[in-house]
Length: 238
Image (cartoon, rainbow, N blue to C red; front, side):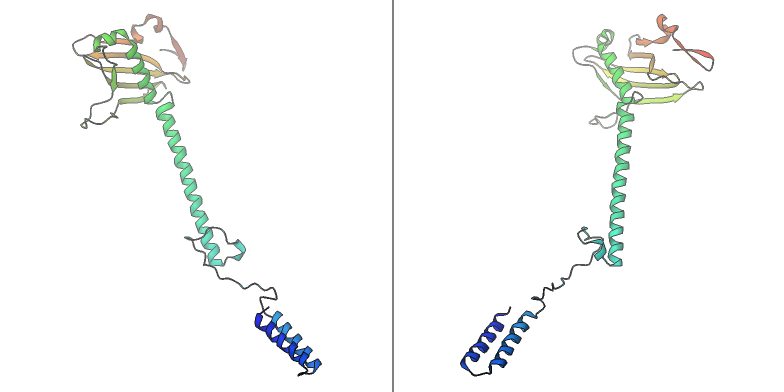
């Protein structure tokens, strides 16, 4: 209650005691003053409405209840949520694409990286290769020379194709360098229909002015010449 109303009511009560006003009139005036004090909007329990910012696409944070929004504000919230969902969906698609590309290029047995790493391990462990290239330092394998001498990732020449019989072929060549010489490694692998592993047709190292070193040569390996698989009613030699 307002302090001024209390003071007015007190004065009227004092006047009653002094006999200046009639008792009935004084009681009525005091009662009226007190009731008037309680009759204000704040004392009746009414909460004044506070204004809020208009909801737009840029400032909507989802705190305002949907029922309290106007038609335009509902349209703004719907547009914002649709845009956010589109961003999330695009991110998921890009993540899935990157994961698939990473698997195909790095981890899959069909990837060029796996074929390259397997061949490098073979040439580094072969005593003939160490002798031909020099074994004072670890043999280094790299792709094609580029104009940029500082480039670390050099392209590796390779190709994959499938012949008329459905057999997949993979051909690659790259450079190998030891402590004294440099050579070129050539490989050819193939995989029959339904097979999961690649088989070497040949894996060889060519060093200038030296005979070719074969690490794998299916045509010159008697034990492998009889290995075959059946496809389309014909025997295919691995």
